[in-house]
Image (cartoon, rainbow, N blue to C red; front, side, top):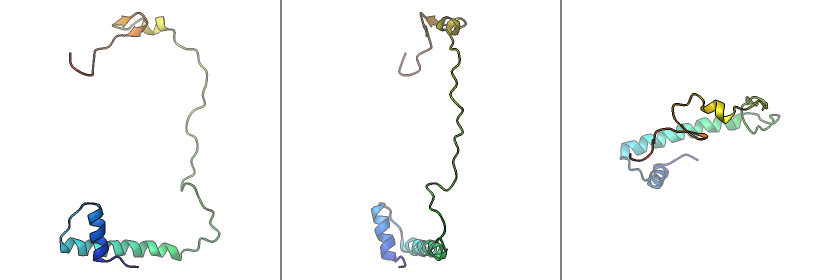
Length: 97
């Protein structure tokens, strides 16, 4: 079923777009070309093709979780330019002074 200028006008209205007559004609032709290309996919024999949930086989690229010794607070704060008991002190970056 080919796309008509009326269809393109309706789609433009839904998208709140305004096109002149030349643009409407151009978009109608372009949409029909796209649909004819997609229609060619219907000609493919997919009888013995297994459906996929994703076109690319994904493998987990994350590393394994490994428990490692943690850094103690005193060691982490040892070279901090400013600290307050067990926290790093940093300049305020949000809001005014």
